[in-house]
Image 1 (cartoon, helix red, strand yellow):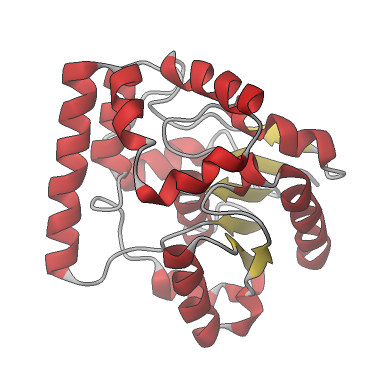
Image 2 (cartoon, rainbow, N blue to C red):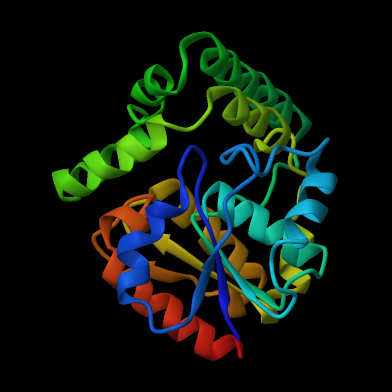
Length: 240
C-alpha cells in the first residue's frame, strides 16, 4: 500500500522533497490540477475530483496539505481512496455569507494572478500572516521552493483558485465526520486558525486526532518535514 502526496496551492510535488527523504512509507506524487500543464482544471469541483481519482490508486491513502488536503478530503468523501491524512485542512464553509465572501476573495486572487503573473502573486500570497512562520525554515530550502513555485503557469493557478478555492468547494464536514475511522488530521502547533478547526472537528469525531506538529505553523512540509514524516508514518500504520 502506498500514499499519494497532494501538495498545497501554488506548490509543486517538490514541496514534499524533505518529507519524502524521511518517510518510511512508499509514496507517489500527485500534481494538482492547474499546477501542471498535463493536468488542467476540470469543469467544477466534482469533475476535478473524478479526474484526480483516475490518477490516485484506489487503495492508496491520500495525504494532502492545505488545498491538497481539501482535495484529499474530496476523494475520501467520494469513497475514491482507502483513507486520508489531512494537513491544515478546512473541510468547507456552511455559512452562505462566509462562502460569498470567500468566492469574492478567491476571484480577486485569481484576477491578480492573471494580471501580474505568478512571481508577483507569490509576493502578496506569502506575505499573509498565516505564512509568517515559514521564515523559520532554512533559506536554501525556501529559495528552492520559491523558484519552483514561481515557474507555475499563472493561468492554470487562476483556474485552480476559481474552481477549487474554498468558496467553490462543497461543505464536507459531515462527510468527514461519518468517515472519521478512515481519516486523520495533522496541524501545526502554531497554526492557530487551523488548530481550532481541527479541535472542533475532533470534538465531533475524536478518531480524527489531531496530531499536532510542534514548532510549525501552517506548513509543516516546510517548517518541520522530519516530524511531519514521522507523524504520517505513524498514522498510516494506524489506518492500515
